[in-house]
Length: 322
Image (tube, rainbow, N blue to C red; front, side):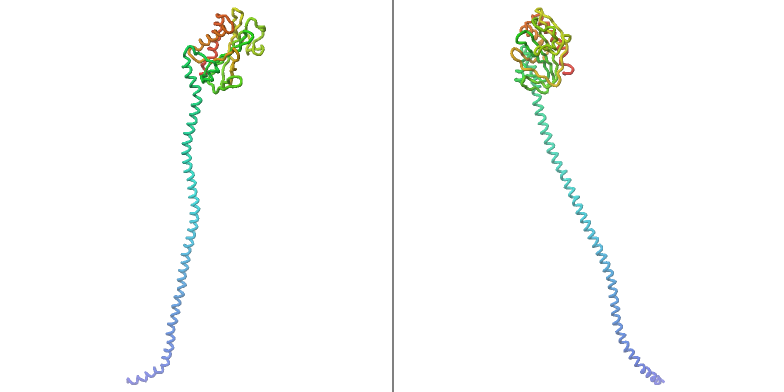
């Protein structure tokens, strides 16, 4: 019975063409070669890798960001001008050296200021020292122009007495000027100009032989007038009928005044502010009225005391002069 089955095996021999089909399957083996294109499909997946390559451009995008960062680097370059602003601060550091010369300049200016300040005080300082020199009773006053030439003219305060004598008669005018706080004294063509205010007192000596007695002193001729009327004068009539007229009040001088350089027998003297100043002033006028203007001794003394008392009362160095 088993052999019977063998012919059944022959039927499979008829299936040999089916084996050929198996040969056809060889191309199926080529299909594995087609699988190689399946490998190519992973190659298609490589484009998928290209997608990561697209991610690389994404990396390039950070590269763009780097460029953007480079642009901020340009902004950093803009910050470099900010660094240039720091050099602007360096000029501020230069301002600090400027402060150094500023410190040097004040020292120079202080020295410069103190030097002129020392130059100006020397004139008042001698004035303060000179009264100490003239404490000698024989040096109560000096010739005004000699005192100026010798640097002994006080700037702080003083009295100046000037005379204007008529060359043909005993007719005379005296001027007493008080001053204080002189800013400047300089020589002019006619005399000395004082840059300061002051007060001026007039004394008029009219001899008995004067031809215009009734005429107000303010209205008299040049060289004979004073800016006063009779009712503004204190009058003393001497024994020889000479009239000595003294201003009741002094005239104010503003800004500056000039003392004329004396001619002939005239004089201009400066009195120092000593303790016995007014006594010295009275003694000076008594002597001048008696010896130079022919006023009797007793009348000259009385007139001199009147002059001294008015000067002390209305022209003293108190109040505005202190």
